[in-house]
Length: 90
Image 1 (tube, rainbow, N blue to C red):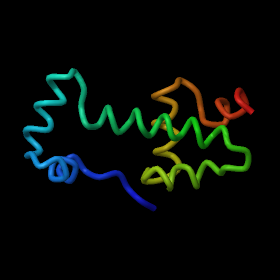
Image 2 (image 1 turned 60 degrees about the vertical axis):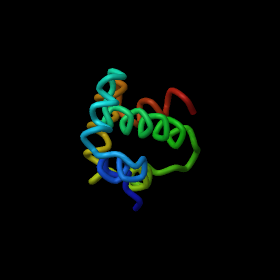
Image 3 (image 1 turned 45 degrees about the vertical axis):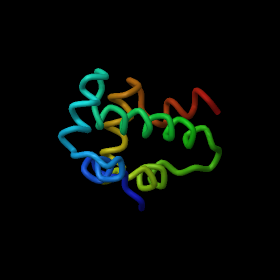
């Protein structure tokens, strides 16, 4: 399982402090967590559209602490469960 870089690690890669990163993102009316969630959602939608992809594997691959955390996040983002979404696209 490969987890997403922390905001601190991303700031380091961008050669700035985490405070500066958070301030700059705030000026753009976003946050590190929002960007991370948007990327995770896009990847989730892609993976759920792949026949045979297992929900537990997707959750693990995207760095969720477990399948239940993945389900809660997906439902919060889309208003539906991963299974309902998958049936709507496959």
